[in-house]
Image 1 (cartoon, rainbow, N blue to C red):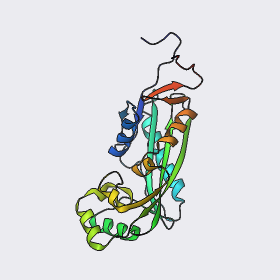
Image 2 (cartoon, rainbow, N blue to C red):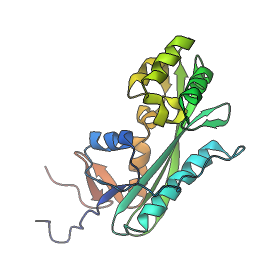
Image 3 (tube, helix red, strand yellow):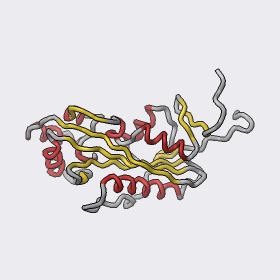
Image 4 (tube, helix red, strand yellow):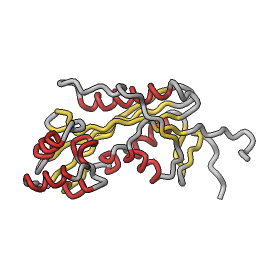
Amino acid sequence: MREVGRPLTPPLVLASSSPRRKQVLETIGFQFEVVAAAPGTEQPWRHGEDPVAFAERTARAKRDEVAVTRPDALVMAADTVVILDDVVLEKPVDADGARAMLSKLAGRDHVVCTGVAVVGPAGVPVSGAEKTGVHFRDLDIEEIADYVATGEPLDKAGAYGIQGLGAALVRRVDGCYFNVMGLPVTRLLDLLKEVGWEYRAPGLLRLVGAPTRSH
């Protein structure tokens, strides 16, 4: 039974079918629903568009599409892009595209950026973005071909997944590791607090300004 006068925590909804984002939320203890945005919500990057603005714009589009059907919930959405030389590397369309992306990334620094967007039952939308530097070790043609043959790169921005076999490609990460997975935890928690809810272990949300539980 909830305490008298204590507000009910709204349900959490992840507006994404990404298993990586689901894994991150489960890691910090959140219980949530998955309601993926409708196909076509994500629009392709326009050459010359600021990549950070693109990631945040796409996250807002996913959030808004799902929030219309869930006005009772805290809706969270994210979009991750890989940026090399100010160009966005999205998900490869096939194995050839994956090999080409990985060849460009090999031995170089790139940036992973995730746009995050949140809206609560009060209807006040917020968004932000997180950037992380990633450095790939040198890779030869056979290494790239072997990795692509696993199938892992084909549904991932930049054609790799750091939480999987792609970990073997990465020499260094400068910044938030969870951002490279697809959901920067600290940025998400900051946005949840902006809409009135702050995180408490193990995966609870407390209304901002509510009294702390006595020990």
